[in-house]
Length: 323
Ligand SMILES: [Fe+2]
Image (tube, rainbow, N blue to C red; front, side):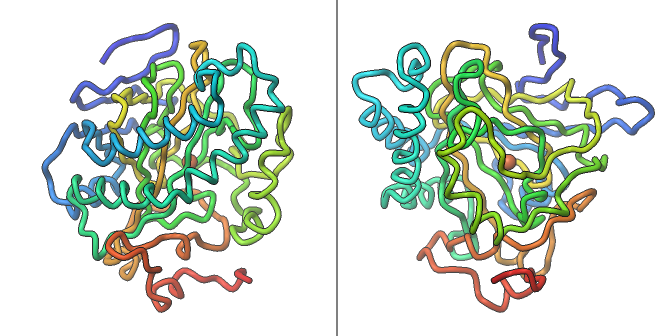
């Protein structure tokens, strides 16, 4: 653990962090497991209790990052993707990203590499389902923070209709620093935050907002669930792993994009998994403040053969708002 700048934060070095009290509220201990050999079942249980897991690069994870770098560098050639803000008009950058990101998401090798990663990190491929990998970019300063390169405010994915058994996987594509990565806010693991998730419906978002992302360049007018009260974001936890390294956290974990003050654009990959056993039993993290409608359950594909979840299992999560 070290102190960096004026913001108090925790950098993973194989430790048990204990953030200080937020006002009168209970302090939350955060367990961070490095290269843990525990079973996937035991790991999920701990993730649902707010723990974080960090893994060193595996062969398939490195291949996935290599694919992302190749596609990105081809798209922006001859400029280097991490320095676009120095010379490329932001409108042109958004245009290129609008083609590049779906190309990566749907690239046939992306799914194969994720399947490889899941196997290398102990997942049961017949019962683990994942959604498509996203390629994210976080530009320095105010160059591009909306739409196709949205800088995420503090949120839980469960405010966006993710199930409580969802696990998020996050990895850097180029080397990162503590000032251009992502922040986790585990002090809010069991602390509810007044938020706008009750106005969010997953089907409506897909119909009306997702495909328009690239048109939001200077501002982002899409309505998204946000905190509706002041939050204490300091201290936070920033897991600074190597390229191809990955960390796992529950969809109920509060997290946000770190304002990029480094002068180097951060590119990262994230995807999500659910385990069929937990889907059936509705086992997962506790819900402290999520009130959205709809479900992302139809997005996940089985790692072994890329088939969807059984319809009967998805039905457990339908609430009548789907179209
Ligand atoms: Fe998120």
